[in-house]
Image (cartoon, rainbow, N blue to C red; front, top):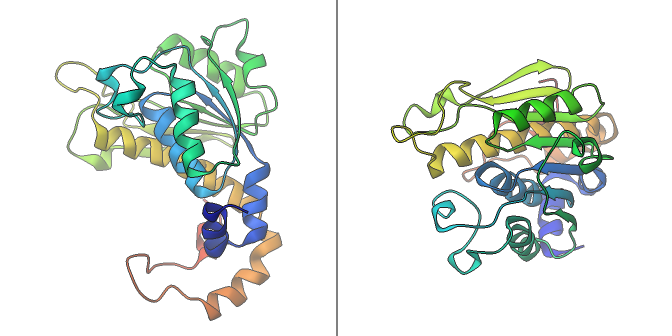
Length: 237
């Protein structure tokens, strides 16, 4: 178990961590949403990822994407993999430097338990939704995350049992509302939170007795993380 995994297990327990580590997560896009989603999910305990993106890191990406100046010019999936492996060197990563198209969308994400839509192109968003919604995979999309101010407009809606949408569903990136770090990172965090919450809930029945005991012995009673006990996090949405 890596140092990161030891730290995560301290907070959620080894059984819940083991459950998360069996989940295969597909990231459609490794830019502002995808790179930050992956970052949050790795720090939450997930370790099996399919990273799909055809693009390369550009200087204009550095204001909001999880890349560094010396990675400009690298394929995004390669650069992102390097950064994620610094957090947890035991990750299982499949890197696909590919465009998402009608004839490959099913194959790219075959076997994924969750797929996050993190792309800009409306046509590709539609392709992903049409491919994923009929499956049992959790599908988390985003729409309307540009600009700054009024952060509360970035909301999460459950549209179907396996379909969540994050964003305000209207604010597109343009000269008046450019893509900026705070709201992009917030939307990515919300997408990651949907995935984390979903798979922790599946562990609820197995770890609930342990959580009840743990909650008495190790209640969060001090520091910045004071709040509801863990069983509230894995209850009904």
